[in-house]
Image (cartoon, rainbow, N blue to C red; front, side, top):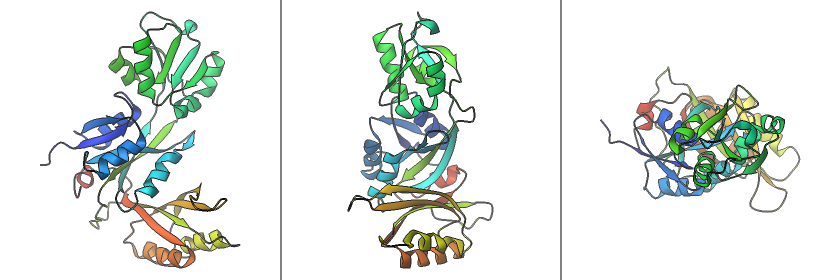
Length: 288
């Protein structure tokens, strides 16, 4: 048996990240923190055991701050797992209001983007806020019948609000992918039933064909890429780094050969985590 784990997330109680924490690390104690940087710091400084952070949404795309922090903390923080959450947005108002009275909706920019068409159709002005559940908290505190929050049904329960409209996301398959991060990498147990996934980041020389040759390392070694994301380098202007998700464990022979090749073609390569595709509580609870 293990002690109850403290799992950091960004936002207020009722946030989608809290929901993802409870689902991906069953029995944990969720710890709300103001910013994603605070979340990474809490794990790095051993104030919490793990953290659950969003990396991408099926409609609004990648959360760039998370990717930047994964690189900044590379070697100190590792991806240990992933969890996909079906995100169902609700419009939340105070108890004594109606939908037709709402003229502004507060929420995180990602959530507002995911419900943009619905808000536009109802003549509701989106207002960016730091967190979905934080927006629900604000509406609860202000008690203004003309404002609402775009947040989860759980946030309505936490902050004593009324659900004025449910499932307002424009894409009814709206999902957010979260990663579970900790201070040590997962040790692959070589269980045949465990399908691996590896996330890494690399930088190429600024010359013609550099990215082509780097990506060719995966193709010629039969490693399937599931995502590639470019971000501006923090060095000279107009240079980029590349984040890659690929199938397999970093210990797999094909992926080892691909990484050897990539090291030859790149300025540098950093593995951010090699982890099971499906969340396994045993893996989450070991090696913290």
